[in-house]
View (cartoon, rainbow, N blue to C red):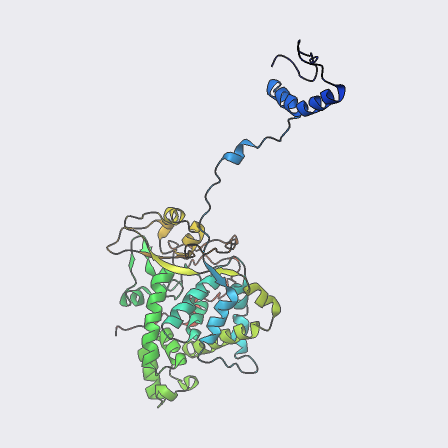
Amino acid sequence: MTGDPRTTPIRRATGLPRVPALRLAALLLAMLPFAASAQDAADPHDSAPVAEAQPASAAEPAAEPSTPAATRNGLDVFARFREGLADPACPADGGSERWRRHYAHAPERLGKHGDDALALFGYVVDALRAASLPTEYALIPFVESGYRPGARSKSGPAGLWQMSARTARVHGVAIGAGYDGRLSPVDSTRAAVRYLKTLHGMFAGDWRLAAMAYNAGEYRVFGALRRAHQVARDADPERLASLSGITRAYVRKLHALSCLLDRADERDAWLQALDRPVPLLEAVELPAGTRDLGRWATTEGRDAAMVRRLNPAFAGGRVPRAHRAHRVLTPARPPAGVPAPEPEVAIATSPPTAAGPAGSPDTPPDVPAADAFPAAASGPAPATQAH
């Protein structure tokens, strides 16, 4: 086009019949859209285009998000815990006042958004329910480590369940260069549940005696029963005077924790804090040749930061070579075609490390430093014999 159709004079071609004025006006109106399009094509500097241009970035593919984790409601975790209690009754005063004060912040740990405690608690509750064991045992990691996978005691025990190196080896938990299975929630929980299953059977299904045996060793508890002229099926743990006060207090600690959680559900604010999606955790075997935990998690579409937090057994996130495959605890992925809610945003806390010196449990800021569920408060490491 050589001119602007809005300014170029309209000439009637020679030989064509005269067009009446009204018809000519109608023809001109019909031509205006086409004339405007022609102008836009001819004048690229026009500041008022007909249609708004799409931004160039709109055509670029968006970064592929990681696969959302499968979740469940935190209230469901709590309900499964309560359903599995062997001794759900609480005294009117709520149990030991000393230990209720000591563990008063435990319910808040479970209700805190972004804290891994509730997800780990659910994982342990599931393992115990699958083994047909009372869920009072799920409170042991609160007493031992405050549900911190990387917790270390000055006296040597480590991990959720505060296993000593000897106990870990007796129960098949690997400890070697670059890997401490006591700091693996998968390996340590599997070993602890298997051991508790054995103790539960040894002591006629009395969870109190089994818990004391976990703390002090089964043969000490058997000896205390003999000296007190008791048998496991109708024992009174408070009368086992030959056991240390720490071991006898172990049951009171667990019962106080159970009652604290039971009483916490009377607070609407706490129930509302639990009423949120919580990642469902699963144990996954790492493929042969995996060397970097974070890279594997990213490749698999899992939350790499959470995977590293949950698995401090791998020093620095590095996966050492081993004669058997390593297993990691990771947020589960929903089945194909099943949408999952958005995962929680983790709070900014310092993750525990597996390579820290003994006695440096890297206590998160929300856990009080004074006896924050440490192993030292619950007595010596369990003296375990092979069965």
